[in-house]
Image 1 (cartoon, rainbow, N blue to C red):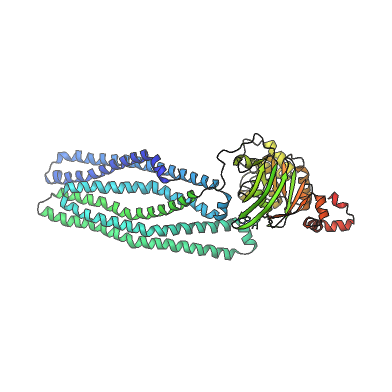
Image 2 (image 1 turned 60 degrees about the vertical axis):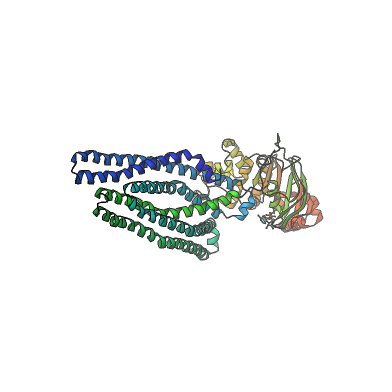
Length: 582
Ligand SMILES: Nc1ncnc2c1ncn2[C@@H]1O[C@H](COP(=O)(O)OP(=O)(O)OP(=O)(O)O)[C@@H](O)[C@H]1O
């Protein structure tokens, strides 16, 4: 289904019918010079004026017939190519969505966007008007040649010599343009990436007054894109006049040699008239060959790129016979888990056991590997060593859908869609999440107050098309989204960092009412202090572990963090017992 041949086979009957319509339209076209011939020879020269009406009626009939069959043919090509383009785009997009996170680590959004949009568009064109014209050109030329040989075999030698020369030119042009189009396609992807990154990161660009630098970066890619397009134009401009020259010479030679044959009485004037009309009729198909080889070269280059993406396989897939749990209770166990990515040890020998409904807090310096633990739990990546168990079952054996469906993740980087608050909380689960549940989740995440203050409340459109939100408001909506999912496991990855202490405290309090197993990654003591176990990571290894109280006694990283965050408060109070109240 990812190959073009699949679609060509699927729609062969439509193409066959379109081909038939093309043949009929072209045959009608080719009958026209015969009528001209009869008007010259029979009506004008022989004076049989009674034939004039029927001959003129034939011209009208031919014109009408041609219009009808041309319409049907074009309709079929347009419909089929639109279907192929849209289905191929759907397949490509679905395939990309199914690829593992590691694929997205290596490929830019802008590049993927140009594959899904521009490259599919070129294939759309190739299976539509380009193939239609190729059919038409071939049939037109074939039938015109047949009639030409019927009229005068000696004169027909002229187009027979010319045609292979034009064909050779078209192949040469296609070869020369093919490579350039591959580069154009690649450069187009780079240009898209720069534009996409710059527009998405416009605030950062402005904040650092980097507009000029970024514009120059864009201009440099734009210039390369321009240069490649100029290179393509130059090839086209250099070769296209040959097509025009040859096609203009053809009728000239026909009149020259045909005229001589008329003077010698070898053929009639009407035959020369018909022959000249036939030769004019194959002039445009020959000229078209130049354009068609241009478009075909572009489509081939695009298809090659798309095939490359289709050849990518998801590294993490649904197991062949997945274990499907009747009910996910939510116990999580990491058993001597290590994770190596591109030769770097991200996590080493991580073990912890979290009973269903319990809470674990994960702390550590930036880059220590906290989010990587979650990435492994969600199977965004697979552990290099050790095993991760959910309710006692290795997550590699579990249904991927059930695994991910059992975890609600509040990510470090909040991503909200340009949609209503409601839709952002429901996140595509419209039929399952009731409005009361959205309100309840917003209440727990301390978001209801500011949402209700908005004119359109939960129907307020946020993001690019709607109102802007503060970092803390975005975090609260993303917490509401996770809570509305009501899963047995809730993961909060540094998700209250933008909140003031009071709001954070209120959320922490609400979270105690949530029955799920909780994994809380945080830099603030207040977020993890009530956890059943807290682990401290350093360079991917567990450096400290225990409860708030035991860790304070250890006087290690946790204690130092605690001192840094509450030191003033403790010394002001001068009382160690304060530690238990915080
Ligand atoms: N996709 C990736 N490709 C290569 N290295 C990665 C990738 N993701 C993370 N890393 C590396 O893995 C290490 C751990 O990253 P991780 O995001 O787990 O840290 P963290 O403890 O969550 O940090 P922070 O507190 O800053 O969010 C870092 O050194 C990071 O550079």
